[in-house]
Structure formats: C-alpha cells, structure tokens
Length: 162
Image: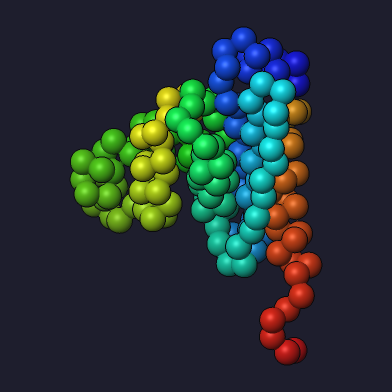
C-alpha cells in the first residue's frame, strides 16, 4: 500500500484498481473499483444479474473513470489482459475495421468498448496489468468490492413472486 500512496503523492496521479467477478460465466456478476488520489479514496461496486466476467471487468473501469470530475492523469491497474491489451492495443484495429476482429467477426462487448474508448479520450491513462489473487493490496481490494457487488445482487429481495 505504501507503494501506491508514494506513487500518488509524488505524481499527483489518480490510481484506479478495477476488477470484475462472475458466479458462472455467464451468470450473476459484480464489478468493483478502488480509486485513490492524494489522501482521498473511493470505493465503487455494483452488479448485473446475467453477465460475463469480461463485461464486469470493463464495467469496473468505466464506472471508475466516470466517477472522476475532471480530466486526470491516471494509472489503471487490472488483472484482466482482456481489458489491458484491449484498450491499449487491440482497439486500434477494431476501430479501423469498423468494430470487427481480425477474422471479421463483431467485437464482443463493443457497446462497453465504445463507451470506454470515449471516456479515455478525456484523460491521460497508463494501463497496467497486475497478477490477480497474488497478494497485490489494490487488486485484492478491487476483487473484494467486485464480490461485494455480486453478493449485493444475490441478496437483493426478488421482484417476483416465487
């Protein structure tokens, strides 16, 4: 944690740790994000009843960036290669091919990728991959928040009569 705090205090960067979780894939899912700036921090989480892990990973990053009130210099930590490589490498080709993959198939989750692409234009972002479930404090906290999103969803009273 001191490494994260030192990085934030020395560079005035926002640090975001984002993660997604899914109980079944597809299944009920959750997303979580831990945001730090100077001595401030914010926790965000939520869920979706029928989703995929990749959608939750993307949603966590989107919700975290949406929470920022002005353009920022940001370090985003994710344990998702899909998110990290998708936004920093693959998206260039997808956009050039009108949201198609190299083998001409539609890009999965293009609604979220388009939303993220629009959001990132407002900021200077460094995308960093971190190994999941390996003791990284920020990643563990984001994972806990993502699972809290799933739990909140699963424990919500049903809107339907059984």
